Amino acid sequence: MHQMHITNEVSPSDPDQLAQLGEPGPDGSIYMVNLLKFKERAEYEDGRETDLTGAEAYGLYGSGVVPLVAEHGGRLVFSGAVSWLMLGQADDMWDQVAVVEYPNRGALLAMATSPAYAEIAVHRNAGLAGQLNIETTGLSVPN
Picture 1 (cartoon, rainbow, N blue to C red):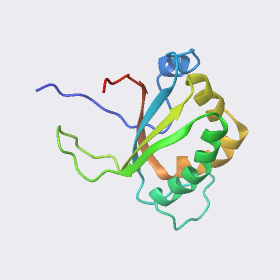
Picture 2: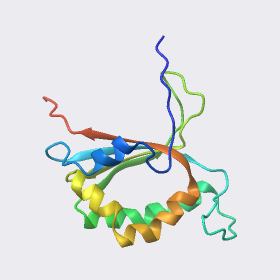
Picture 3: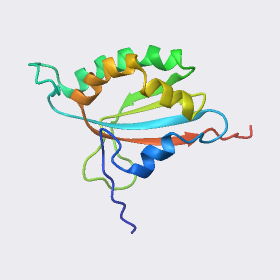
């Protein structure tokens, strides 16, 4: 059996990943698959006191980022809680999965580097223990 090493992160740590984000990317829409793991309790970088769970803090981010994604031509395709790992092995499961469509990688970069995003990202960072972001492209499926 092949074992994969998986590391959840809150921000990219691999310079190659950061460099590739600035590249044009695939033609057409991209679909970002987000595998989210929340902290038990939210922890804000500015040290503010909070009774929020990590999921609740991330929810504040989510309610702000959905309209921001739309302003950049994208949309939330799916979001749901992880309920069961049917196949495979994982030491620790993610809590939520979200799929977000962007018209292209440039739209994702523009959104993620906007001042409006920086304002709401504090809730993302407070709530996330880590995540995986997987860029995918749409495939034509015959009927």
